[in-house]
View 1 (tube, rainbow, N blue to C red):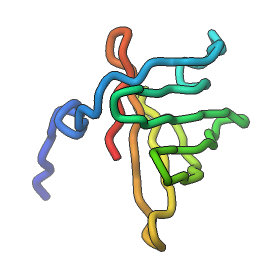
View 2: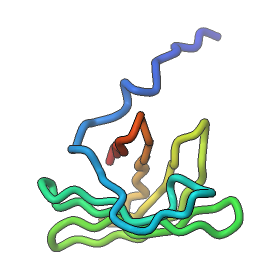
View 3: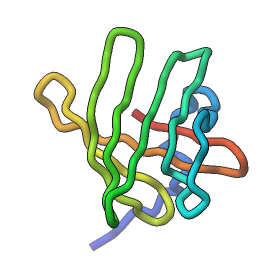
Length: 100
């Protein structure tokens, strides 16, 4: 079996830098509220044990998600018009990036 290895950064689509706009818990860099005024995308993340829950919001749209941390990246699933859809949230340097 042949497995193709692709750097994880290839999977990220730059939607603009997401800034943490809440008082973030030091223990987990993915807990908080992240947003971008330009794209009007907002991600709210809460942690319960090893699992994450939260909400993805864009103008006129709101989706709840469940997720987990995989290789240092938050990977979650939300329902988009009846289709299970995956997203990622990653911190690179001092910036957060998401792929929807």
